[in-house]
Amino acid sequence: MVPRPIAFVSAVNASGVRNLAPFSFFTAVSSDPAVLCFSAGLRGADAKKHTLVNVEQTGEFVVNVVTEALAEAMNLTAGEYPPDVDEFGVAGLTAVPATVVKAPRVAESPVSFECKLRQVIPVGNARLVLGDVVCVHADDTMVSDFKIEPDQLQAVGRMGGNSYTRTRDVFDMLRPK
Ligand SMILES: Cc1cc2nc3c(=O)[nH]c(=O)nc-3n(C[C@H](O)[C@H](O)[C@H](O)COP(=O)(O)O)c2cc1C
Image (cartoon, rainbow, N blue to C red; front, top):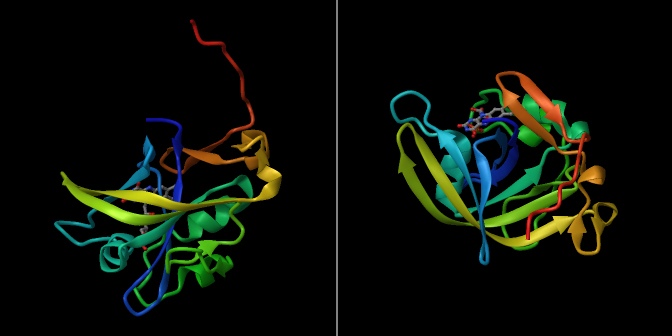
């Protein structure tokens, strides 16, 4: 399925170590209440990725939007690091406190969604994580008439494997009445 948006998920473990990782099995589920989801595959038979462990431990996480400027840093966080490694440090990104949840958000990301865990649904060799969006951060320069301006955002999508796409080639269509 291409292109896929990328959830750049920040979370903390029970000891407060900060974690960051990208998830492109990611979409919105409901607008009222605002709910999003991402899917974390298991490592091997049943080993959980750190993001999933942290989200289950704390019940909270932040989804940060990946822009062109953030793409390389995002890619660095996809490596497998020991659980005590602060992946904000690995990626050279700035952690700023979120408003509602304990997990920090990524300062360099212009749009972030603070989430409280709604449900983890086991699906095959993955775990689908549903989160209620409890706070949205959007850089003022990205917003016009209460809407995010995609041209300003310059989000990137995943095309599978190591390939990505920009979101600059936009066209409009009127819907039939
Ligand atoms: C762009 C991109 C998208 C990814 N999407 C997913 C995904 O949807 N699900 C998944 O389990 N892993 C995905 N990965 C791999 C995880 O990011 C990777 O396993 C990471 O090490 C998990 O980190 P964690 O153990 O700190 O949670 C993706 C990697 C990249 C680079």
